[in-house]
Image: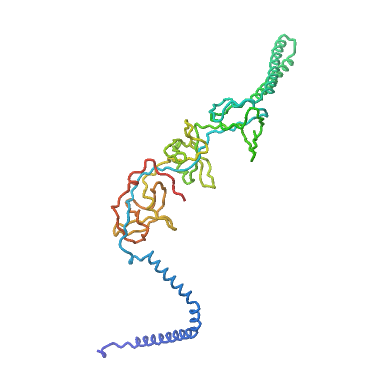
Length: 437
């Protein structure tokens, strides 16, 4: 058989050349390794190890512990234990009422500081503190003797000028005086009437009347007090301080009354869209921690600019306050019924996992009961429910037991997957408060 085998001299030459090349490369590599090995100072290295032996030992312990900790908290799929018990829900599409919750302050619909326009003495206070007053009611009477005398004199001059004008007209008709005399009489009559009206206005400053319907506050003046046409009406000095009051009394309108609050600017487009034909938006207001007493109202104004400091816009709603239970300055909780989110994905808020990369949910795969991490966007959240975008209807989402889950973990259901009550029937009062960013 050896005699019958074909002879290939060129293949032998190639093999011989390849062997020689490998020998040369190996010899050169071994020579370089030998040179590097000869340069290593093993004595110095050993001395360094002896000097730093405790440091090196501590480093080795730390690396070993870190490796074990990583394996514990991030075990490979092959080393993970059996299926983890979880609770999950099936995602469904629903219509969710959109309501914004906010906090605000009760403010007066109208408030007026009553101040004098002249310098005079208070002769009579015609109201009591806290009294309900009507528009035009007399509040204070000032010393009007001088102004009344000036008015009487101006009125007398006006009456006399009117009589002179009547006589001048008769004389002109009989050609006893010229028409220029009649013009002078008319001018004099008009001038004295104007002076009488001015004196009447000046006299009216002595009678301070309520410009609005409302409740009187603390009265800061008394009969005999000197008031001046300035910002400071009265000063009082005690043993510790001197205080000044800028108004004789403050009249506050309490019915109707307003509530002022702010809404994040990201919700303004939805609010304006919900406000069809400028129709007012309904609100429900509770005061302090007493949520049982609800006061209905309507938003009548949305401010025309956003406050850049807080990134929100101001709104005002008007409430009825016939019993006077609402007082300006009170803290208020507001629920604003904006609109309805139609055909959206609703899941429990606790199913959403937050990490540095964003918001996720664990989806359970139908085939092998393994979980995968799915990024989602939370559009709206309220009372334990979240409206999300990023998953399809019918997906199975882990709600409880997700603390130790990792992508690829195998799970088993603690109870049959079902839609919880919170999802089956949306709350009639509608969720609110959009997600804070």
